[in-house]
View 1 (tube, rainbow, N blue to C red):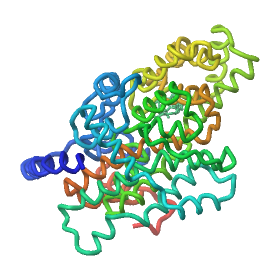
View 2: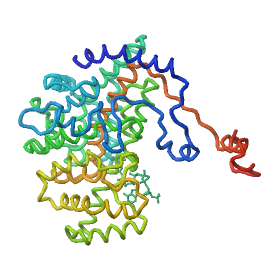
View 3: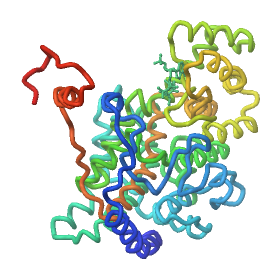
View 4: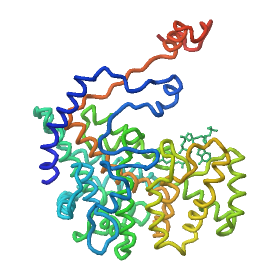
Length: 449
Ligand code: CMX
């Protein structure tokens, strides 16, 4: 298969490059960590290397060095479609080369061959209570697929370390091939009385997902799916799901266990659930004004919201200092096809109004929209109105990036991740010894080391 053939010759020179770097400059410090960072979610501390993607504060995400506009322009597309094939973005993330149409289609064909989900997995999901969150079902489905994992079987019979990446790629292809059908099954099971729409072998990965959730005829939604899955495929290594995947896979847990753990992190309201919060908020604004507010009404509503110390979802970012290009790409799609949609008009008006209001507050570091300011609106327009499903869409897309990171981490023979922790008492002792704080007479938790 093309991904194996393309990745294999790239690994030895990369291994050599990294070994040389570590040998020659291994003791060079690249950053310091403050006590505030230790207690503050290790925010901003450069603790890992990701050669697959990088979030630039001013340009947004670069996937294998390409900005979002560049990937949208350069990745191959099927004739008559607006956005690239998902097989192409997977090829780019995995191989680090811009694929031709034939190469992207080879990945798509490989996925079709591996897409069958075993019946026991579907039966297990069918047996779950109807109120189960779709992210729980996604995580369970992925974990149940682990039964077919290749990595542990080869590991048990003494697979050499240099072959770990091949078994990881085998599992990655098997898992990613099944994701559209798994997500569609969860959607149909949860919201459409368990209806079954079989895959259409003539369709690509993204369009097939759209087809299997009942959007066979809506080619604009097919294209939105291609766009959405590309935009969410990776966001460097430090976010909760990426970091989780990196950590779990470093223990040589296979790709199914790795991705299920990452999905569990993505399911948190501070990470992947933000998109549903944003849509809920937009709908509440519409409800409050009985429709689209005027710009003036919205501005005073926003000022009031902020003065009450409330957050406005979809705006701000921990790293970005500009409009998220993933917002822009969907915004441009919306300008073309959603002009008459009131919710999209609200998104547009907020974009024209809110950044100035946030700037006036003086404390928000990034007053511009992030991708969540628009994600839900696009899905809602096309009739995918079940908010709690949106994180599943995000999840199946992000697994494309997570599996690419894992294949390369194993290919580059990265070791198990094991940072060190300290106790508060140790920190205080260090600070006292350095005369940076006075000796404490009593402290809570005095039995700690
Ligand atoms: N509305 C109101 N206040 C905001 C704000 C917003 N959208 N964004 C930031 N602020 C406030 C922060 O709460 C913080 O206030 P305090 O100093 O009183 O605690 C202050 O501005 C400074 O925050 P910051 O340094 O600009 O932002 P952070 O890096 O701390 O947080 C983020 C980033 C995304 C969590 C934050 O902007 C936020 O909560 N936004 C709204 C929720 C949202 O859109 N989440 C999706 C994030 C998408 C992603 O991460 O990919």
